[in-house]
Length: 228
Image (cartoon, one colour):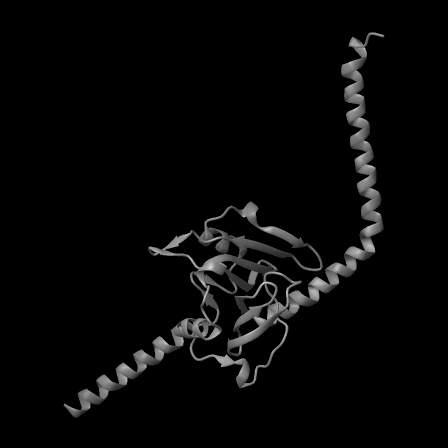
């Protein structure tokens, strides 16, 4: 009997441990997971592939998708306003979540940390050593600081507080591809600057051809019926 009780206790502990590990999967947000392909994300979000924006084609393919959850989820108002997915080489490396201001009105950062910790485990608070630093997010021009963070060797989840206007965002990041994406973004901008003069010439040439074609079409239509 003692043996059976010990076995049952061991099995119970293993089950709790497995549940804890699953609950702290920092790569997942709802039904989405860092590392998913563009096609898998659009299918899960139920949006057309045409909704995906092309950011850069070189030196690496980089894309972006905004998803707006239905206003009602499980019979309750949806607090999330927008979820932005960022892709590097066809793989999801960052998820940025923005909230409806009126639906988190009155909630403190501690309230949000408490809710998020139910999924991701115990948070590291800014007061505990992560410090205040600039973080990425939905708007590159908006200042934001990390209030709390959940992290492991592969992924990080951050609750960031924004200013102008004050609010909160949740960021899930795979740091390794995110670093590659940052490097690729800088290189893409450098290449764009180099190619800008030639691209402008090409644009002007194309515009000139379109203007001449339009004028010729109007000429062919108006000439036969012109009366002075």
